[in-house]
Image (cartoon, rainbow, N blue to C red; front, side, top):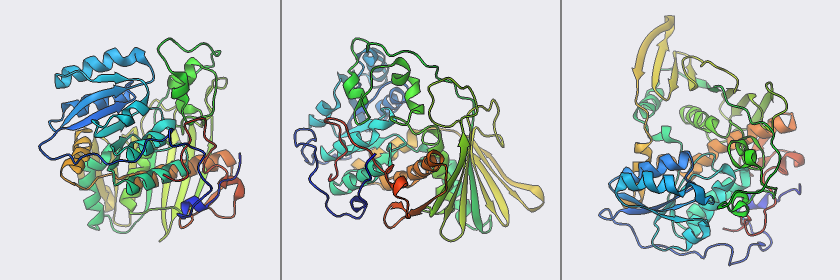
Amino acid sequence: MPSPSRRWFLGRSLAASCVTAATIPKPRLLKAVSPADKVRVCVIGVRGRGLGLGATFASRPNAIVTHICDVNENVYGDAIKRIGETQKEAPKPVQDLRRVMDDKSIDAIVVATPDHWHALATIWGCQAGKHVYVEKPISNNVFEGWQEIQASRKYNRRVQVGTQSRSMPHYLEAMEYIRSGKLGKVHLAKAWNSQLRRRVPAVPDSQAPKGLNWDIWQGPAPEHAFNENRFTYGWRWLWDYGTGDMGNDGVHDLDIARWGLGVDYPISAHCTGDKLQFDGDIQQTPDTQYVTFTFPDKKILIYEQRLWSPYHQEGFENGVAFYGNSAYMLIGRSSWKVVEKGNKVVVDQQADRSEVPHVDNFLSSITDSAKLNCDIEDGYKSTLLAHLGNLSYRLQRPLSFDAAKQAFVNDSEADTYLKRVGRKSFVIPEQV
């Protein structure tokens, strides 16, 4: 893998991009969306997560899902039915997301594709003048995420990252509690992902099913023959497409831990991990990871992952603990509590989990200029932790990170993993 230049992180120009003007939508700004108008939305990727998000957007009074986009025509029926029933108007299906970028009637896109498409769809969306709601992790590698920030800023587009906890009332209340000083000095946080994941057995390559555009599905990833387990659940555990569960569920927990600690970029990452269960499947990513991140001002974040656990830790499948010198806090998606000296529980509250506040915040940022609860830059910082932890695992050594250069310290081998070579007309542009 060729070593990337560090200059793209410093804002200096590189050689001309190999991407032609016909490949990337031409920049243009759409008309402003007034509070009286409905934001016209296209959901890109409508299996699983995208289908749920589509229904949520369709339920909001200031939005209408006018289009759905998926490379697989076989999933259109369910999406059109569910979204159409929610908003009493059926969305139009589109197979090639480049046609979505060409459509001036669309104000915003929701990116719920497999992870390897998150960055390019976001960049194209910004260039086409559309606001973007993008699922986490925001990128497959570090360079892609940085380019998403540049595109958002250059084209003045609102880009919300789908870390829904940023808008949930009990997380906001908990963050205020930490800021109040009631935990004392908080130097250490621990985030964990403890759950039982199904495995992905190896199956032979085959012909892509009718109605699926396999070329577009692969997008910026290296080219491979169609494989059923690469196309469905398995992509998440292959480095070409996914970032393992640290980049999946783990980004939620890392984001909350980083938020509570009040930190930005780490100075080091050290991962101990392995694939401990079920040899013989296609999974490349580890099922077990312990990562220690150190930050300036003597703050530490520990991440734990076990994908073979039929039980939860501290009552949470996904949780975060903040340790202060006066008290500690445990928080998850449905509750939070605080324990003081002498193991006295002073807060123990249940909470409802909903993505609606996060979607509403995104829509309000378009119609009323509300501040985003998880802007693309915050999403980048949290996704970066997953990338650094994974790279420490892959290289089998600690890594030092230079936040000013957005690159590793005296580690040319690690630098080669910051980006990858693009494919055909799906190259991440050097200049957005």
